[in-house]
Length: 378
Image (cartoon, rainbow, N blue to C red; front, side):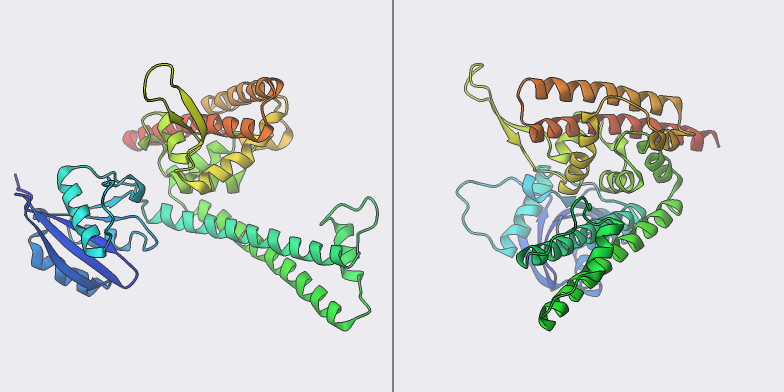
C-alpha cells in the first residue's frame, strides 16, 4: 500500500497560487507563490513527489474546477473544499495567502475539511447554461422596469384594461410618441433594450432544449421525471438537475434541504428549555433556493391535474406520478393549514419549497435507480 507522504494546500487566485506542504510527520513548509498557469502548476507539483504520494486541496471559488481537473489528469487526488466550513480559530486575526495555504494543508492532513461535489463536464456546462438564462431573465425584467418607470415619470399610462406586455400593450408602446426629440431617443432605446432581452431569453431557452436532448440518458430521464411535478416545467427541471447533480449523492432528503439553505437556523444550547429557531440559514445554493420558491407558489391551489401537467406526465413511470400527486395533496393541505394559523404567506411558501425539494429527491433517486438497473441489465 502506498504511503501518503505530502499534503498540499493551495490558496488559488486568478493570477497566482500560494502553495504549502505538510509532510506525514506534521512538518510544515511554504513552497512559494506560483503563477496560475498549467505549466507552472505541473512543474511545481512534479517537484513535490510522485502523484500517488500527494494529496491536494483548494477552496471552491470563482476559478472553478480547472485546477481540479488538471491535477486529476495528472493522477493526483484533489479535494475542492467548502470555504465556509473551514475551521477558524477565534483569535486568529492575520490572514495571508501563505497562511491560508498552510492551514488548508494542515487541515487536509487532519481530515477536518469538507469537500464539495465537483460536477462532471456535462453537468457543469448545463449549469452554466441555465445560470446564463437566469441572468438574462433578470436583465429582461430590469429593462422592462426601466421602461415602465420612464413612462410613469412622464405621465404615460396604457389604456384602461390593457395588461402589461400583452400584444395590445406592445402595440401601444410602438405607437407612443413624445414632443421632445430627446425623449423619443430614450423611449426607442428602452424599447430596443426590452426587445433585446426577450430575444436573448428565447435563444437561451432554445439552447436549453438542445442541451437536454444531447445530455446523458440519466440527466434526460431525471429532467423529464421532475416535470411530472406541479410548477416544474423544462427550464426549472433542467436548472434543478444542473444545480444538484446526482440526487442519490444525498443519503437523506434532509441533507438536500440543508444544501439548499432553506432549513431554519437553530440555537438550542444550554438545556432543554432553551430551544430557539430563526430564519432560514441561506448557507446553501441560492440558485436552487430561488427555483424552489417560484415553484412552491403553485401549491396554494387545490390539487388537480390540468392539461399541461397531464401532457408532461405522459410516459412517466407510475411511481413518479404517484409521488407527484402525493406532493400536491400534502403541500396544498400544509399551505392552507399554515395560512389558516396566521402565518405570513412568504414564510409558508419557504416551508412548502423545502418540502417540495424532498419530493424532488424522491423522484430523482427513483429515476436514477431505474437508470442504474437498466445499465446493469444491459
